[in-house]
Image 1 (cartoon, rainbow, N blue to C red):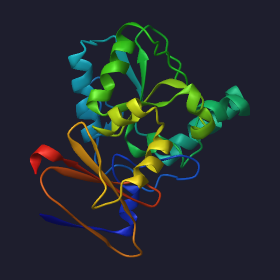
Image 2: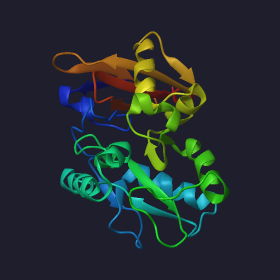
Image 3: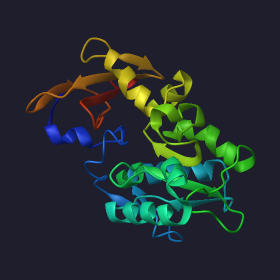
Length: 245
């Protein structure tokens, strides 16, 4: 059994952080790596990038899918936002570009992808729902990625549908989110019904718990194979692989 001590600021760290206008980025992932030798300027968290590369290899994507945008600093996001305001106007920008501080790209857990077909629109790259792109979309759940912004959820996410934007949340959360028909905002709220230590959400061989943040350090115990992530709002999510206990 391991004793885990979580500081108040840890609520903004981990694969399940919720980032939007209400809950802005508190910290980027601790370790960023280049997507590949060919795309050294595009970086992601080491864990997310490793699984993304494996996913692309496993579906035989080859050069059919290319990365467009990964991690962005606050300054980079501000430049993209302001440039879009000038070039595309306010209405377009509010639909497709998050304000600086509220962009998932600032976490190192989000990636924009495009079908490799010549000229690519940086803000709205084409990632159609057929062919290799749809093959990626369906397989992504098994590797911990979700299509983050769906058109039917825009009243909640405040972002219009973005078929090209994928977010790493880790497995089994990706599958639970898709099967439950959640967006990330809904899922983070849903998990509050599964309080540590007596009421886990059990799915796909994992037990998932919500732990509210306390005033000082938050202490929890766990054994076997597990991960802990802040939700960037008010608590932590403990994910335990059941057959490792």
